[in-house]
Length: 117
Image 1: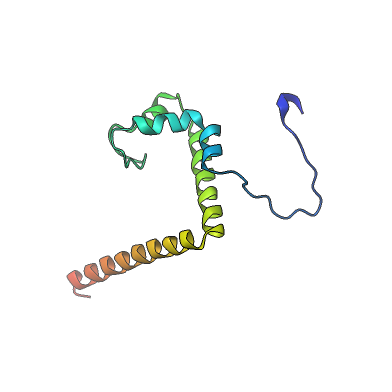
Image 2: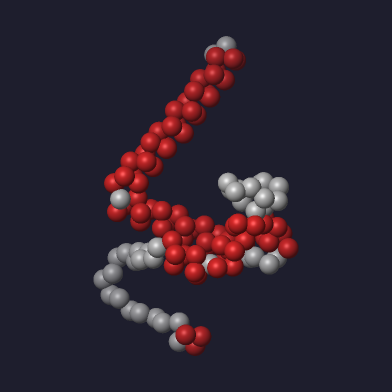
């Protein structure tokens, strides 16, 4: 196709998956990955922290919101593939979410207790 794209007709194919790794993602989104180390905080979540290079680039238009969302989506898909293939990663993910749920339950229980309910 024009622009170098390739269209493949695959009758009967039900699922298309990601077959890349972190290095391929970083290479494809070199503009995004170049901004991440520039953030003020090394553990920046790129959501609301002051001095975030990603938020600054989104604000000044040098990084489009669509490109940032595509990067985040592919990062999530890559993490899913890793968890699917690595039982240790899946176990760590379960532990993480179990702790999050436990914290939330405690928070709501504490609120109910304070309200007298």
